[in-house]
Length: 257
Image: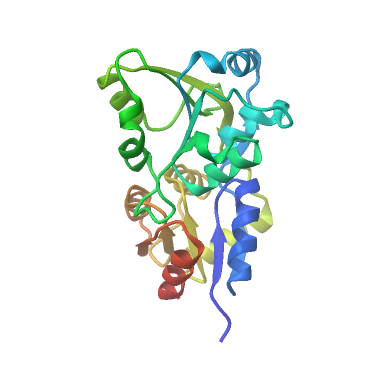
């Protein structure tokens, strides 16, 4: 019996890697990126932050895209060795290693952690933060370049006496779905494919792109309880939560089949 189709909704660059991994595990995975990643319109502040990285005790990267846009022009040069680099998950850790950051300069949740999020990261890096510790959070922004996303970690750092600065390294935009994209999305809406969500923002973009579509027959696997809640609130009929590892995702997707 052929495996159920899996719709990977991560941004295009990440989606390609996940599609390859899931296909290697025997699933019929296809990409439908629901977040478009674009450079910032004015890179002046980003360029300055790269040259002044040593003014911070740590650089926290919210995603692999944040790493890629921060380090891309300096891919072949060594990062400032005295700066710790924080990451919430394996994808971001991989991007840091690809950018040339030594493994012993990276702080992240353990590979077998129950969740890869700010809470799990904070449990590891909290001892590094004291009064006056400067942390630069490298993140995405909206179409206008304003920072978006959770500020939970920033609040914890500030509560511990640290000083937080946010840097928008890229923009997260809603995608433009073509006819083939919409046809694939309708397969998912009708329950003929399992959605794989790693962002609540992707769910919102999907619903806005297809107004009036009902999701009661749709099945989804989400990589965090908050994302699962967003899918349930959007009306998805069956929603499972899974750790974002290939083995765990395959098991959850097969349960959804």
